[in-house]
Amino acid sequence: MTRTPITIKNPAEISRMRDAGQVVVLVHRRIEEAIRPGVTTGELDAIARDTLAEVGAVSSFLGYYGFPGHICASVNDEIVHGIPGRRVLHEGDIVSIDVGAIVNGYHGDSAWTYPVGRISEEATQLLATTEAALHEAIAAARPGHRLGAVGHAVERLGEARGYGIVRGYGGHGIGRQMHEDPHVPNHGDPTKGVVLRPGMTLAIEPMLNVGTEETRVLADEWTVVTADGSLSAHFEHTVAITLGEAQVLTERLAPVVY
Ligand code: MG
Ligand code: MG
Image 1 (cartoon, rainbow, N blue to C red):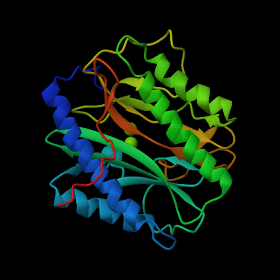
Image 2: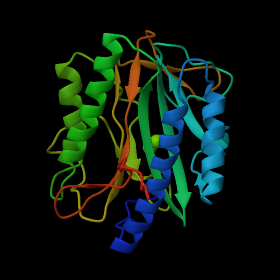
Image 3: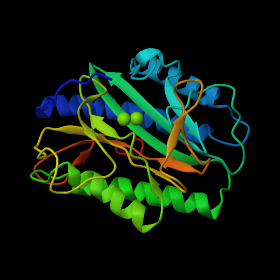
């Protein structure tokens, strides 16, 4: 996968990325409302398609290296890059919905793993831990820290809970391209990696598995699954490094009501 080099964005560019990020949040909100036993991942994809069209945005994923969906929908043991289609969601499933949108030339990218109806205690713990790992990784994304601190935060929490930490896939720089440098692994050494600077924009996306960290790719050549069939969760935000705490550009703000 080709990437563009690390780019430093000015405040106007970060503002445009926040616009893209808030479109991503809108798509997530509409999909979250629709997730229930009996819905298909293809129906969720149609919600994304219609919502993006309504606001004049374009999916970051559709057509990317030939990807056929507007979103990625990854169920249970599927980690990332699940293709939406006829699969029916059942009570007790978990589904990672990954949404990317282009608005005025800039990308926003955020994934969230949702429960379908009532889920097991094992699944509940996995979702809570992976979301917590995302927040700890964002807290580590401060100017002057090295990139390794971000992955280290994910690795530390995942290991403490005994989860498999997915190493073959991770986050990325983001901006005018969905994938820019640097690659943002979910493991690392806080003393290694590029020094973070204000104006860097990153998609941080921990993926944790109940079982092994080993993965394989299904015959569709997209869907990444856990090698042992165990559950996997994935949470992602697009953030901007600032002088203090990183700003979350895909923050799930309350909707405007008037
Ligand atoms: Mg994503
Ligand atoms: Mg991403």
